[in-house]
Amino acid sequence: MQKFYVGLDIGTHYIKVVVAAPPQNADSPMQILATATSASKGMRHGYIVDTKEVTRAIHDAVQRASHAARVPIKSARVAMGGISLEEVRSGADITLTASGGVVTDHEIERVLAESEKRACAQARTSRLRHPAASSPITRSNASSRKAKNGPHPA
Image (cartoon, rainbow, N blue to C red; front, side, top):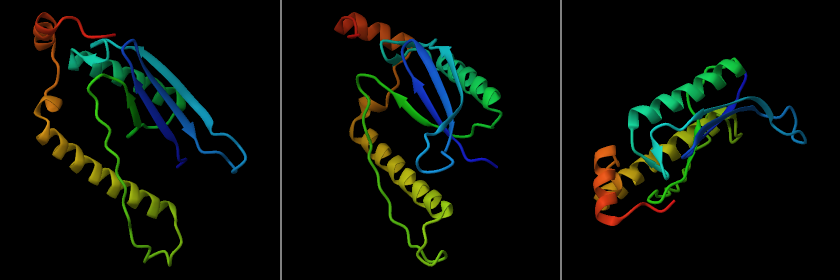
């Protein structure tokens, strides 16, 4: 099975997906297998105001890219801007015992999985410290926030 990478950009106006294959050699660029877009329904000024609509828009764009690239998409690197997003940086160490000190695709997958596990734990801890960051903005409370605080900046 061919290895490939998926990027997902969730924007206020569009959801964009790109599927790329690694280069054949180090001097070549990645090969773009497919791109897809869909309108960002459910987003307003970088905020999710309707989770179901955003989910549908993401699903639509991912399905289009998957069909065009003829590969099943199971995961992606996600980019999403917004006013109150936080960044979580994570790293991980693994022991290279089975490979005899050689870094293979298996070791890369192991260290990525460990790093993602640590990042998820950091994000949960951050949300516990900042309860407002973990409460999603819905259509109803977005309207009440606008009434109390004025319109959100664009």
